Image (cartoon, rainbow, N blue to C red; front, side, top):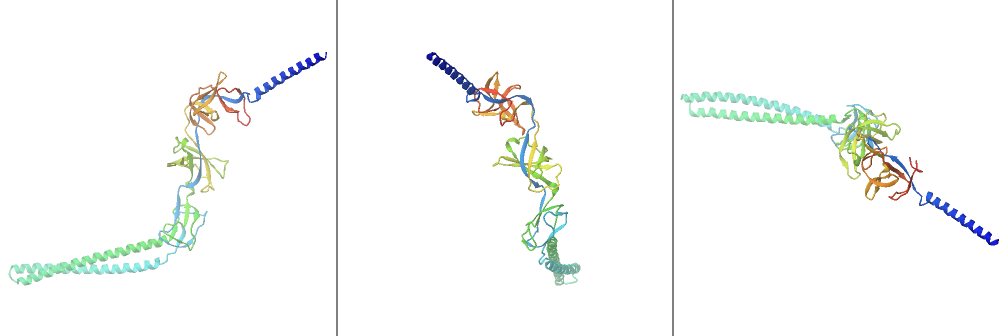
Length: 396
């Protein structure tokens, strides 16, 4: 009786052990290391995408002006400040003329003296001209009388010598007149230059704009060409954006753009590509383009950061897949395909990509193919999988 009871308990323990082993095996196979990998899938479908190119840039002025003197000098006054609006031709600053007025007055006197000298030289030329004409008439008359033997040869030669002297005096008078005229022209040019320098003492705004920088104060000494003020045209503001070279093959003037300013992130502004720079940055592998606003917003500041999204031309019709489905395995680009319950890696050739996460598959996958998008862990050819609607922490 006692032996029978012990055998019964042994059988019960063995059965319980078998049940435990079976339960543990089930748990291991379903949720342990040997459990199938959960994956999400998508059906490949044909479609078109409108690629977008994203970039970051800063607001700059297409037309800006540096206002400064043409000669070295001291700043006498500055009549505008940063943020002020100016009109074309408006005086904005003035340089100290130093001795320009005195030098101009001295040159005025020199020009007047040169004019008097030229008038005297002209009178001398007219006198020499008259003397030459008289000497020429006398010489011709004496030559004729000498031919008729009414006067001696010596008298004829004397008159011819007088004519030669008169010719020399006229030549000298004409040379003096030319020199006096040149001297007057030189002095007049110097006076015009001084007057222009005097006029340049007043610094004028070259165009309508806004003052963005005041670089010198009254009493400061500046050299020729050094900026006293900086002025920009607000209507010429645009965004200088830096864009990825690898995706900029279709970048062209006229492409539509959306501009998001850091100061107003919730309101994208329409614009267009105004210019594509011929030079790229070889270090950052970026291309530069200028994006103009369709309408420049009020209160826009130079140097503000902006995000730019360009809409490139739509692609041709092709298979589209989520970017997350594209994998890299053994130096190959491809996707994991489920074919009749079997998992295999299919190499693909990809094309354009959208900012929304869609990628164009040019070869390797047919429409209707079931493709793995996300998986709990890295897959292999012999991986056991189970398809689920979503994974924890992943979007379906």
